[in-house]
Image 1 (tube, rainbow, N blue to C red):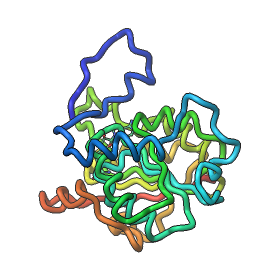
Image 2: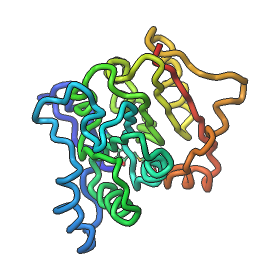
Image 3: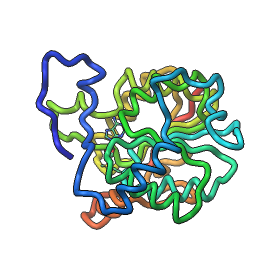
Image 4: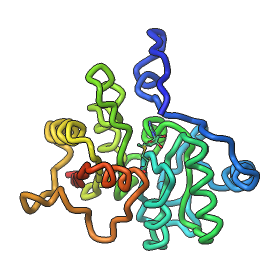
Length: 236
Ligand SMILES: C[S@@+](CC[C@H](N)C(=O)[O-])C[C@H]1O[C@@H](n2cnc3c(N)ncnc32)[C@H](O)[C@@H]1O
């Protein structure tokens, strides 16, 4: 994770995005996937969005989910294979992550993933209203220092953007091993009238939901002794 220097000339939406676009050099086949497979699967948000997000998949579907910051793509690839009738949009600005999901799509012949290699805030603004059934944000960059909290993905404006694109009854799911970011997310979501926290028992949030696929950052947190929280919010 590298930081961009703060630039007072940048507007709020730009300042909110501090992802890393490039890491280590791609292997030859990864570079080929970026050059040849990514253009076939990438969403072009310069144009107008279709009236129904399900139309970006073939066959079209009524059930579309988004994973923000999928990293190595372990969770995204597993969900897409487990739910073949659902369309999945994966958003990740980090090119090495993009190369990894492309390799999994190729190896598993996965046909129900579309990709966006940029800032999820821009993708949310492009997507049609009430078009998604679920948004997953799994181990987002934690930005633990107080002066960097404004860089966290969960903010009032991104909550409003997610509320706009989620269908009524849809869900925002958040997984995080940084207690302070979990508390931050709970307090921000609880002041939004558009979301309701789905916790049935006191320790619900300590257990992953059925079928959850652990990610690289989840395994790292477990190795380092940090317990993740698994929060689910329903779009009311
Ligand atoms: C800590 S990593 C977690 C990756 C993966 N979800 C996991 O659990 O292993 C956070 C990821 O979010 C991505 N990211 C950061 N800001 C983002 C944004 N505004 N939109 C989309 N992805 C973003 C980063 O590039 C990074 O890959």
